Amino acid sequence: MFGDNLDLAQISLQEEKEEDEVEDVSSPPVLRLRRLLTIISKAFEDGDFQKADCAVLDLITFLDGFVESASSIDSEAVLSEIHRFVLSPSSNQMAVDAFVIEAPRVVVRFGSVSYKSRELVESIISCFISVSNPRDMLPAFCNALHSLLEVSTVPIHFVVILNGLSKVFYCIKSHHIKEVKHALPSILRAMQYKLLHIDNTYEDFLGESVNAAIAIAKSIQFISVRLVGAMKQELHSILGLYVLQTMALVSKSNLANEVSTCDSYIKDLLHFLPLCKMSYIGLMTGTDVDTIIDLSKIEDTSDLISCFALVKDGASLAVIWRCISSTIAEVTGEKLDVVLDRLRIDKDNRWKAVNMLRRVLSSTAYPWVFKDHAIDLVLNMMDRPIPDEQNNDNMDYLDIFLSIQAIQRILIYAPETSLRKKSFVALKKVLSDVPSSLQFDVLKDLIKNSTCSSMIALLIDIVKEKVFPRNLHEVSNIPNNETGRPNKTKHIVQPIWCLNALELIGFILKPHDGGPPSLPEHNEAVLSALNLYRFILLMESKGNTNYSCVLSEDNLRKAYIEWLLPLRTLVSKIEAENKGNSCDESDFICCSLNPLQLVLYRCIELVEDFQKQR
Image (cartoon, rainbow, N blue to C red; front, side, top):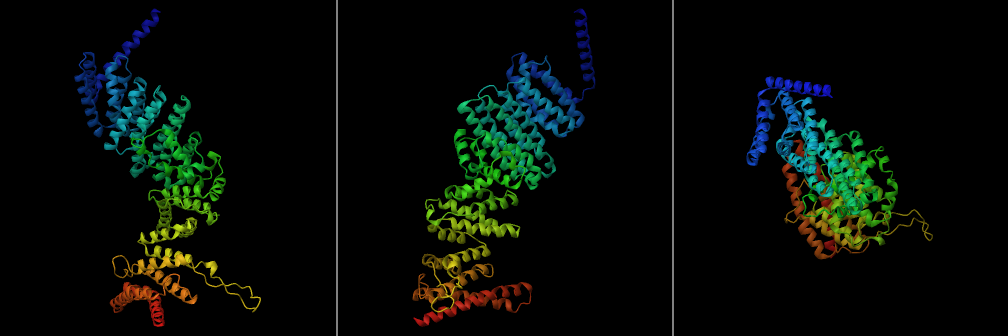
């Protein structure tokens, strides 16, 4: 016994000696830190809490200013002193608690000074968690994240705090859901800021940021094990929302530019979805997202709901990632082909899936590879559309329009020809799946809301196909039994489409400003409109019909005076202005007007002939 006490005494003397030696060689920052910590401890011992609060503020201000210019040696010395103070049995506990609440937001910034400093910071954060109440550490770390958004662009600062938060979650003993809901807004804002706005200098830390986000998800899952019934279900729903939001943020980050680097992260995220009762069919249609939003009991007015703005993007992206990577396909075990088969025969859910995919298609934030696979999903769903008589006329028109407009954007802006071609096929398939009563209105609004002449020309060509369906024009090679000559199918027009087509032609040839269209900017759209007008004139006259009223005296006069003559004057003027110039631009303008002139003059001749017959 005596020997043991002697050994302890010798150890104590040795420690005091080492402390004295440290004191002798301590740098000015360390001495300043010690004095401030001593003042804080003395103030708490004396019960002077106002002085203690002021001293804590002075200490944080000192550290905040010092970190900007700290060398690796001074940084490591200061961090070692903080580490000693927090863990020392002789430190005043109230002083430690007061310091720990304010310290994370500034201590973590020392982590980027040197590798050793980072190790010390991570150790100090763990010490904070071990010596303090976890319910106190949650707001401390959340405040640190909020503060860092204003002063730091270094990812490692956020990674350390996020990892600290995941450890705090493991320590929570009660009010689990309340604490998680309180912390998630700060976590998600920090993740969004770092994943989407990270400086290229720190791209190596993107993976660490995602791993920290996954660590948060794992800690929430751990908490759910302690819960039962409705509370477990609610926390699983919150976890599902968090995972989908993270999925979208990862897909928007620079990591997604190199798909292979994301495989492991996406796999880790997808592992949580079965736990949260989410399947491919529910993700594609959005029904599972709506369900977990309801079960999470997050109010629309809460701060948290705004942080989940990308969860529907994440739902579609979870399926798209499944299409991109064969290794990811193994995670859930679900067969996507079975899901697509279900959507092909279920129009309501098929359109829900199209509306979900439009979020990815219309966003400029996601790489083109995601849009490519999203178009493939649309094509697969529309592979065997149900008969028209099963159309649901109660479909939301705005959803229909926005979804087709999203596909149209891919057709216009896609960098690859193959993707543009696929998008055009997808646009036509989706449009054909729209209820017949709405198809013209959709096309009309697409045309009126487009500023791309080439796109308008393509849409006018679709209108032409609706007015004169190809399968009704084709000449049959089957001989007539009576004459022995080939039997020609009579040209058939769609009266309603024919009547509506004139409205679109007028919109293009006489815009709302009252003057002729702008040329040569809108050459393609004008040429397509003139071709459609000429085609209607010929088909109506050939079939002795007038479904569109195009051959009525009033409409012939209106087209001649308001559309064709002003356009001829404009074309002649542009041609005269460029004819004498010998530059490439003038030659290009004249050449681009030639096809338009040919069709324009043919339309004028036809109208004049029909007017003479009246």
